[in-house]
Length: 458
Image 1 (cartoon, rainbow, N blue to C red):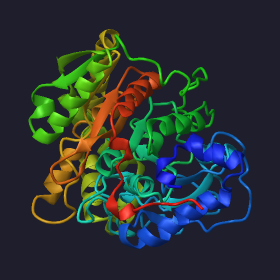
Image 2 (image 1 turned 180 degrees about the vertical axis):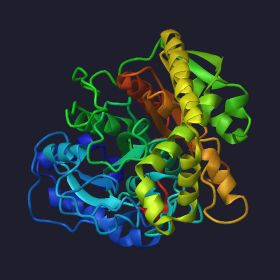
Image 3 (image 1 turned 90 degrees about the horizontal axis):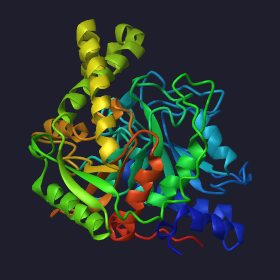
């Protein structure tokens, strides 16, 4: 049976019923890693198979999970994609890694990332470029590119990433999988290498929307050891996911900011998605979202300035240890004045209020995840094209709102297109419901890159 055709729940039930074993499931992923990782470079560190049974017996009993190499893993190196941390071996697991293990998840490896998560191409100068499985001349997106590639190709059943300006949703869109950035504070960041204390989010990358709901259930929860963690009521993110979306009010983002650099094929795909929602009884209305432009710019200022603050000693002592692109961004961040940073924080407050008002009227906002499909890694205009990737995702890091990318078709070159769904703070259930409704009416989530072939579980 094909691993990629099975949801996490189906994999878990097969293990519980003893139709397959934990080792069978892991072996299918290890075969894909052995076959594909030398080409795609999705993993920095592969954790060898073990005969030990998973610690927990929860939602992820025996499920192989890939972990972005920003999360601390006890006894296993955590590089952050950086020369500075190339030999760092944590003595404790990150909070989220603990939660995954407690739920029975099997950590299968540490995935490739853009250096210190400050970039979206995953072209890492220290550990090599991670490549897009749909076209290996192109970027998989970043900075959680390795996690998206691992899921898209069956090298893992699920993965976790981080998102500061789109770093979960962008690779999900470019690799044809699902990426969820929850509300800021929903998932603890303790034990995760920071980029921006104000903008970082943790979240899952999966093949299906229902799998993202399960991963969110596992990963979420209050952590007194993380000052950004919020106390929230426990919720079951799967229980109402299949409810009807009839009469739900959906805003379809249009206007110059969304459309001025977005490929027409992407605009067309998202418009067709809006029609799918309308066919299911949702009330879809076009809305102008020009105010998101300032949010994207402010997010860039804060991300670079916060990154420069966290890495200030490393930047002073060994600037040559950073890759050229990351060093340039850190130096730019260090050069911002206190006034520029204060204005960015003021923009953050203003845009949050605009979004609060928007979601008093609408249940969800839909727009493209990225304005372009996967750009080439090298060549003329490669850098300029890559800079466009955060344009439509970064505003929702600034506001801290839940946002998800899911497959929405392909362009004429056969490259995946991502649909982004956003809602009010703490309404992950609403985002998942809208995503599941779209997924149930389309076939895009079943499409896998040819290089992945089948991934059979014995």
